Length: 331
Ligand code: UDP
Image (cartoon, rainbow, N blue to C red; front, side, top):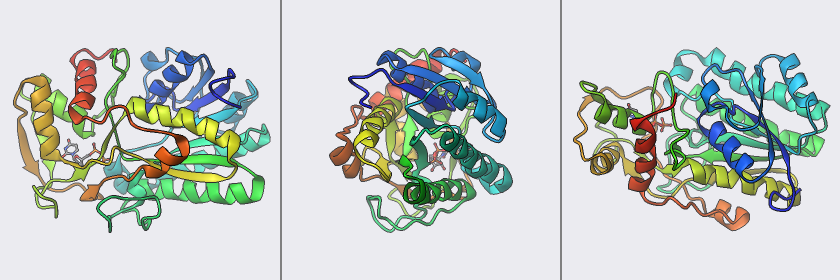
């Protein structure tokens, strides 16, 4: 199973969402057979331009059985997560039900259909308050919110599956996914939008819209939270490399995905002002529940073992691709 020599059949759960749609497109561009499974609860039908679409819900085992029966898949990518930290604090049941029980349902269906390769979207939120400036994969795991815990529980389940069932997985701990495909046919769209870069760009584009900055007394140089922004196409490149890695290396593997550069909310606003040529209006607001002051990745492991190097290492270039999308979004 090598992604460069063979045409692979791949199931993309959450393929109508932000990362899943970019992944489906990249897989299709490389000539692989793509099947998307999505309930369209937060994704967009208009993002389903690549591969066959099966509408279904992770919480419904019959839907999963139908999807896994449709073809013999070489691997499954799982992007179907609920991802809003503050919502997870308000609605932990929904987060554990979708992100943990839903994933267990998917894993059961995979085992029933003898599919053993799994690539899972985890998150830097599993680390909680950082005790190192740059976070390696062996940093202590202490998520601050149900979203982070839901992802950590799945990581632990995957370790157990590797030992008990010879089930192979790669978990990617994304830092902050950002940007859009350079041709802007697809991009980042959430309703409501909670993410920083889209909100900054919307405040720049929409008259009268003001950005809310959540917290200005964090223990960071300017008091706003520091994050590591990694381009969506770089994230997708890593997923493709993971399929090749799983062909050689059995077991459960975990990798950080980030650029290794920390930018505060104010840094991102300044970079976006340069890109758009406009001032971004903002107000300081109270902190959001569950936000970590600083999350910056050491991705040396992905570089060494997957041969992965992010191509977008300039924040302005990342924001530029996002801006191209937000100026004229297709959905
Ligand atoms: N943030 C903000 N205003 C917004 C959205 C986000 O100040 O409208 C801050 C947020 O508190 C965090 C950072 O920007 O410190 C990144 O937030 P985002 O939701 O994009 O990603 P997260 O790091 O929560 O996964």
